[in-house]
Amino acid sequence: MIDEQDVLICLGSLEELEGRHGAVLPPVAQASLFRKRSAKELLEGLKREHEEYIYSRGTNPTVKVLEDRLTALERGESCRCFSSGMAAISSVLASLLESGDHVLFVNNIYGPTLQLAELLSRFGIGHTAVHGDDVRNFEEFIEYNTKLIYFESPGSMTFGLAPIREIAKAARERGIVTCIDNTVSTPLFQKPLESGIDIAVHSLTKYVGGHSDAVGGAVITSQELMEKIFYRGYMLFGGALAPQNAWLFLRGLMTMPARVRQHEADALAVAHFLAEHPKVIRVLHPSLSAEDRNLFETQMRGYTGLFSAVLDVEDFDELCSVVDRLELFGKAVSWGGAESLVIPASGFDDEYGPQGIPKHLIRLSIGLEGADLLIEDLSNALAGN
Ligand SMILES: *Cc1c(COP(=O)(O)O)cnc(C)c1O
Picture 1: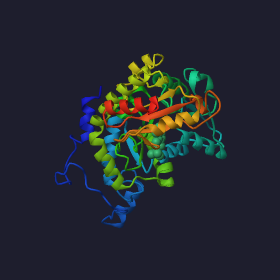
Picture 2 (picture 1 turned 30 degrees about the vertical axis):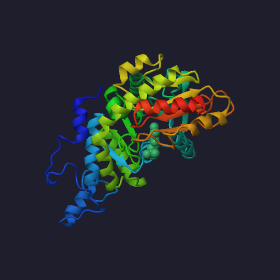
Picture 3 (picture 1 turned 120 degrees about the horizontal axis):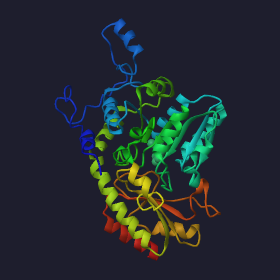
Picture 4 (picture 1 turned 60 degrees about the horizontal axis):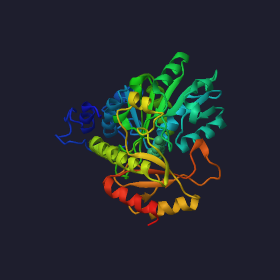
C-alpha cells in the first residue's frame, strides 16, 4: 500500500508555486553560476555553498526541487542528486571512509558497486561481501575497523531480503554507519531511514525516471552526514545532476505512484504464471518467497516489477534461445521503464555463479504492456515457439 501523502509529495501538490507563475513543474534553471549583488554577498554565500545558489556543481534551483521531494519521500533530512546512481554511491563511500577502514557488504550487491569496492582496496579500504545464508548472520562478519555496512534489500538479481532493523540496531550499537541501496523498492515501498538506517542511495535512472531517457542518482540522509558528503564527494568529484535531467526526474516522479502500482500488479501476475510453469525451476520475487515472508510483511509496503526466474534448460545456449524468442521483452540492461526488458545471467559452469546467482537465471523488468500479453509471450518462448 502506497502512503497517500507520498502521492502528493510526488505530484508536488503541496509546494509553493511562487516564482513559477503557477506552472506545475519548476522551470529548468539552465545556469552554471548565480550572480550576487556585491563582493561581500558573494564571499558570504561561498561559505554556505550547501544552501546558497553559487554554482551548479553545488546547488541549483531545479535540482533542489527534486531533492526536496526525495527528502520528503525517504523521510530524511537532506538529499543531494547526482549525475548517476554510481556517482551517488561512489561519493558516499569516498566521503565517509579512509585508509585502514573496512566496509561490510550485505546481500547481493549491484555488480559495479562491488567493482568500486575492489577499486577502493587500492586506497587501503578493505571489504567483505556476504550473501546467501550469511546475510542473516551478518554480525559475524563485522570487524574491529568496520566503518560502514552497505546493503541491498531486496538484493540485486536474486531479490532475497536482508533484516533492515537488525542491521540498523547492530550498527548503531557499534557506531557503524549504515547505507542501503533502495533503488528496486523505490521510497514508496520501503522507508529504511524510518527503521534506523543512516543513508539511502538511489539510481533515479530506474523507476523515478521511468521512461528510459535519463541517468541520475540520489543520496538521502541526515544533515550531519550530508555535510560531509557534500563538501567531500559531491563537490570534489563533481558528479552533479544537470538541471535538464532533474526536470525529467521531477516529471517522472509525478506518475511514479501510478506506474509502480501497475508494475507491481502485472509483475505478480507474471511471477505467479512462471511459478506454475514446468520449464521454470524457481521464481525469485520478494513477495513469493516463503523464507522472506516475515521480513516482507514487516519492512515493505509492496514491491515493484523487477524479479528473476531460474529456467529448466540444458545449457546457456538454450537459455539464450528462450530469451531471443521473447518478442515483447527488450534485450537490454537497466530497468524500470514502460517497456519490458530481459537479461540472462552471464554463462558460468558451476551450479552457482558470483554472489550465489543460480545458473540459468533470467531477470525480468515488467513494463506496462499488460500482464496478459506478457504471459502469452513468455508462454510461447518457453514452449519453443
Ligand atoms: C542501476 C543501479 C545502480 C546504478 O545506477 P546508475 O544510475 O546506472 O549509475 C545502482 N544500484 C542499483 C540497484 C541499480 O539497479
